[in-house]
View 1 (cartoon, one colour):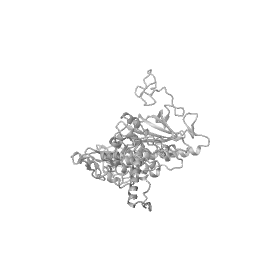
View 2 (cartoon, one colour; view 1 turned 180 degrees about the horizontal axis):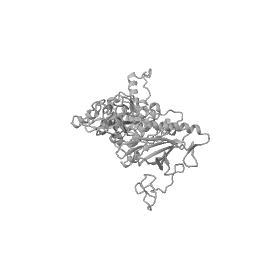
View 3 (cartoon, one colour; view 1 turned 60 degrees about the horizontal axis):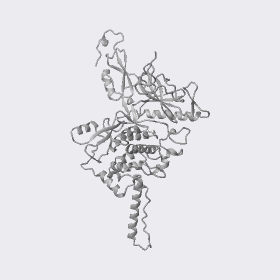
View 4 (tube, helix red, strand yellow; view 1 turned 180 degrees about the vertical axis):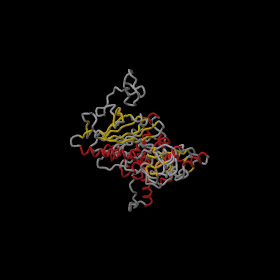
Length: 545
């Protein structure tokens, strides 16, 4: 009798014990969504489809089982229901009448996006693409299935909000990843407490990728905008979306983690841009972090922080560094001060000067009150908070670690030369920074931190392309070690040879020594088994190690 599998976790369902999975609790009597592939459909001869986990205007995400590895995965099917329908066989995706061109165009976008995300497989905070294939007149992307919960649930379980230190450490790797994605022209446009998930190890994972047409109103696809996280330009079909839009979504999600509340939807905030940050939360945040959040959540694109590099600077900058960046959101909203003093008004110019300063001060107070939320605070309260936030005793400046060895810095900390914790936020390829050395750090060099604080660093994985080493006169075991250390995946193929000793390398199968290949490439190595006759000579020699 064939073993039945749960359509959610693919554990075996015990015979005669009902439809509820004893492992995950999923009710297997629940029908698949009408538009979805039938459960237990096998795609590409390898992936068994389970329940539909999510769907939007672009397609459907299924729980699935990789029959080759026996591991759970997620399969994303391109199936835009506003343009396509399912064939009578229940599998093929066909264009609605007159929608062939649009369906083909967005299918190409889906494949290109999947290929782009697959290039980020070394970025641990981005859900990994394991496979891309076409079948049933559509395309599928296979993602790694990582046990996790949504950031929304994580925050709720943590009491409704996170501390600044916890949120900052969680979000920094995602900030770097989004900056990299946008530099590769891969905006996410859906960053939210739903698409950011927290793994069992306590790290954030960026999921929920969709083509841009599904994340902006006015396209042929049904849009999916996350309320409070979608930037104003995503509500305008003619507006350009990109990195500046992701900055808004990221900042809104960070605000949610700190306060348990998202901003109002962007169109509503055009009328009231206040950030609803309570006094209690505000007191726990560094002043420059409040400024960064306010700048990242400017409704109008032209006033908003435009890049993750800039946002990272503002989010980590000490007050002395803030002076080097643009004005804060509140200052930017002030009208220019008129320097020409009124004449013939019957009062001395000095009185007018004092009065102008007073009016400007009042304007600052009003704007600060609006900015800080519905519990608007007095100027004295604001001043006191800034003093409380910056009055850390026994602080010291962060040393410069960029371009230096991560292991050497770990040793310095172990020796007690500095009193802070060093943590790798992410690892990135770099053609300019040596492997194992530090690319960037947060806080930056020269910023004050307290003893015991954490410094996050990005560590280089070296160049994304590597050179195949020479193999003359060395054993496979020696070459295998060198290839593995250089990031390649060596595969051995045996071949008889009258000239090369048993166990020694004859050649690379498809490449030559000195060729440049991508990190992680599979390299097939042809290894000698001795003479084909097997009689005497090198063939009687024990394999070299």
